[in-house]
Length: 149
Image (cartoon, rainbow, N blue to C red; front, side, top):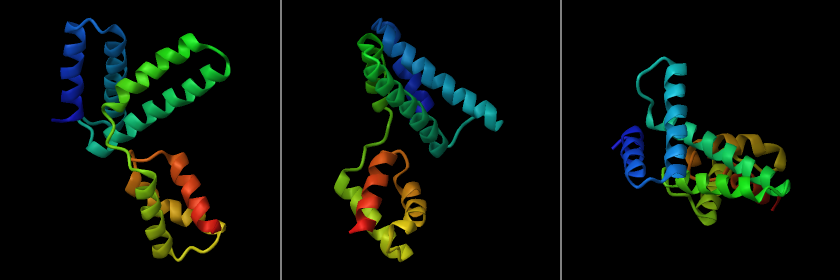
């Protein structure tokens, strides 16, 4: 089942269950996916393109959550946190820190990176492998840590 079909099914379930917040979030994601398809001039998106849109939506919400919490707006922060929970159901299983470390170590060996100045080379190899499966900040931290050891 494609992501679009899954979103449509979940949207119908949310309507029946009268889950207003969940329905709103699903509609926003569907709209983002449709906008991306229109922008690319196609009817359907590839799985990778769908994942890119989901990651963008998730990042926007995480950034908003941080901003609302730092501003002391708990009412808005709780709403965004609920949206994040809904979005996480559509994200692929996240890699553990150990799994990311193993991928980073393999990339370091592959690129013969030895210093923090080689970070760009390593990130260029690692990011396509972990796209959607690991937070970029976590990957960045692990690469820095591995290159400074």
